[in-house]
Length: 158
Image 1: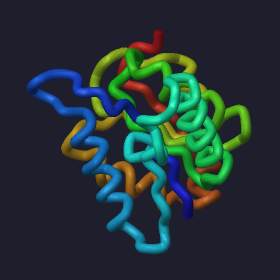
Image 2: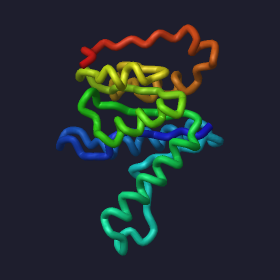
Image 3: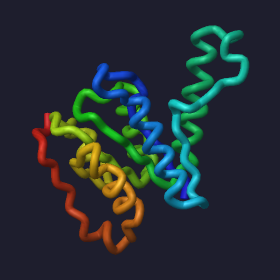
Image 4: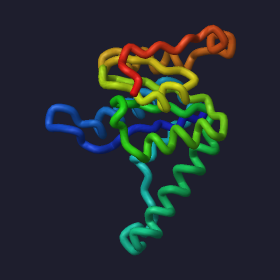
């Protein structure tokens, strides 16, 4: 299974390092099943990036990420809530438009975007402690499980 791991890689605060959190999720995904392939945009390295203009580098990153979404089986979005990054929101919208299986795990009690919620095949409010368990459970859902799955949001949709 090819998994596209979407989420912010910005450092939110001194108390919570989002990039480190995302790296730990990528590590968990890679150790979960050896045959799975995980693409993490925040790990992308563009050859000769320092020799490129900002516009050329931006286009190269966009093209690689789009290609990875096109190629994935599952789009997994780790969300801090409604105020996630514009790039992550665009990625989910694009994955939705091309009919990808979308899992959104929101690890806060912050408000949720109705677009994020409605665009997800699976949406689950979780927390930092349970996110790994919830992620593995979502990845193991069968087509039969999905037919009876009901999304529930414990936060306010805005």
